Length: 237
Image (tube, rainbow, N blue to C red):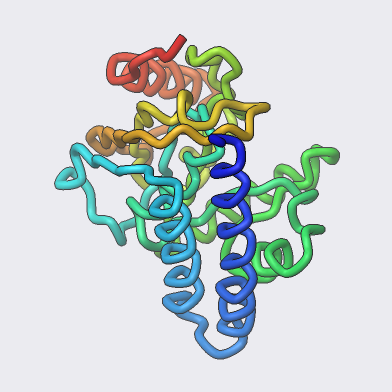
């Protein structure tokens, strides 16, 4: 019975994705502010959380401007982490792998919208994606990166990668560590069994990055941010 409910939920999410994606795609040509585009993403993900009976608790939102300039760095444990972040920060940009752009309609909305596509098979293209992300965030955007690079399979934090911290150094805008708790047990990697529960987002104080100019400083920033996220993270094993 639980599997049947999960299938119904996934079908509802997939079906509602189409009209939201079409409106988002059409809005790119007429609304360069991105307000309509991000409204579509935020409301589709809000519906997705609602239909899956996932409650959202946000701690520390008063520490940031939800529309401000930030590099948002988070842990990654579930397919619901992106919907949760899109409902926390209204104009968030996601860095997504090129393969997702091949998904009909939704993929085109990602590719031609305000998010940032990364070709992970080519090192030079990946670096260009970082440069574009740095330019976007300097001009007023927010970019989300998952510091581990992939979802954890056992509920424990993985080692962090330098990409997010290189982007912070390139852009010079504040970096905000964000901890996501509770999403692993709802939908771990490799599972399609959605288990309704609460997800908590813990937002830490922004960290200035203008003075970061060397690789050693990037590594120190990475280690400091991992300590902050680890201190707020509740392992789900």
